[in-house]
Image (tube, rainbow, N blue to C red):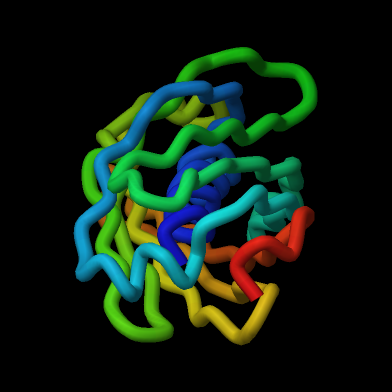
Length: 149
């Protein structure tokens, strides 16, 4: 879940504006919940309104409450930052640091949520634009190493 949360957060922010991210994010949650999402996860996201897509990859080592991840979207290399990730039971949620969307040159905030089912996490995100309008999308990652199963 923790890895998925990081991936989702990255995907949500990237879906609205695009970028590359590679940093450490503190994960919130109980040890058993975080341990359930340990491993290497890979997947993608898609923004509904813009059609933007990108790849998601993140790692969470067992015994750590920190995940390392990357979201990539073609054409832009802007770094985006996750500010909060929470893992509770089968749910991952979080928010992104506000960022400037190059499509509208306006500030955007993104929240995400996902559900962990075995070695897959499926989720949605909502990016809110400064004028109050919203962009939506989906994301999905799968455990690449099967270490947490």
